[in-house]
Image (cartoon, rainbow, N blue to C red; front, side, top):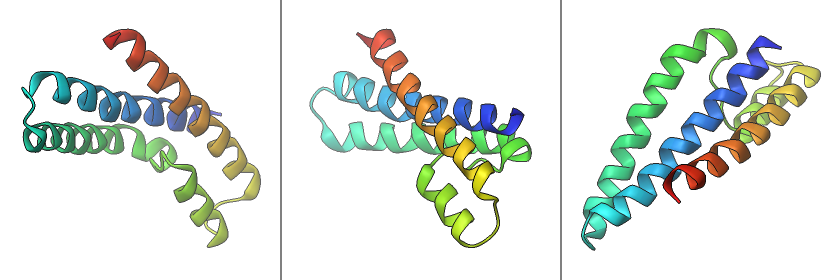
Length: 105
């Protein structure tokens, strides 16, 4: 349960960083697409590093159903654990994007 919660939180915060930095990059770059993409990439990279550092020891910091499925197909994760992770990642992703749009209107 703790690992699935870590996956939900990690996925949610990662999507907050990705979507939020995309929205803010567009609005603050003054039409400079390159600058907006750079800001988005840097924010995403730093957020992912922080999330992996903090939540990696708890859940493995997969934050992506495709990664979880791959780990399961390789036999590195039980199917029941993978199902819980995937459900948590989808829920966390939806909540993260929704919260980003609420925060940034």
